[in-house]
Length: 119
Image 1 (cartoon, rainbow, N blue to C red):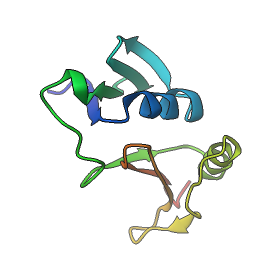
Image 2 (tube, rainbow, N blue to C red):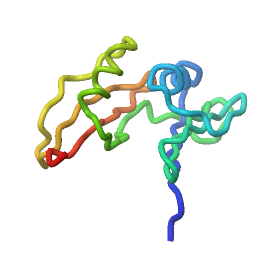
Image 3 (cartoon, one colour):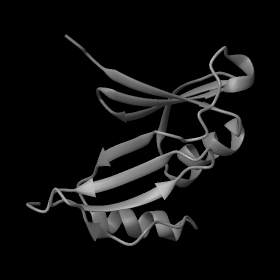
């Protein structure tokens, strides 16, 4: 049984990507070294950013990766993201019925923010 989940993104633009998640998206840092930063998404989920210069795994440059995050207030999240100078897509209806918008991080990873249409 899985107790917790951590997605690790290996990045060539490590410092810029850390600033994006920490300073612009305001994610809380739960662990940090000079080449690895772990962010707490909630009690059981984490996102880590690793400097590819210090690892044996190299960046995918965002190819084939989407971070999909369900949020409670999609309109407020969209406004908050735009307020810090990021460029989210417009909010649209996803084929499965959820409302959704997207951002791209400095490394090229797509982030999908969504909220159920039932909410």
